[in-house]
Image (cartoon, rainbow, N blue to C red; front, side):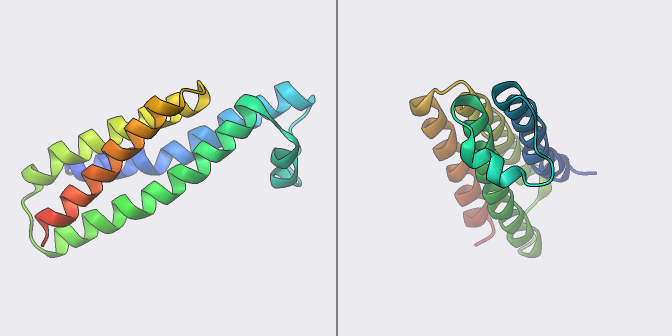
Length: 128
């Protein structure tokens, strides 16, 4: 498996890790994790549990963009070696994004978001 595909797999797992973290934080904050209607319970949560849910949603959105960029670059025949480094930068930025979201560090979260977005744009440009 190429580095870019490993990065895609890691990126696909980030929302799941954040969902688990959010479930734990909901349980801690609200006394239980309502698995029958978790979205309604997230609406009641505040603080870290609420941020975990927002980070999870943002991670799903980032996964879509990253997947599209990798597909476009692959179809265009971009060498895997060129995509690899940018893909690793993307993954690092997305992992940090989740960490900063949970830690309530908004400026660092935004910086990591823009680094990840820049990586996606870079991959698209490579395929142009």
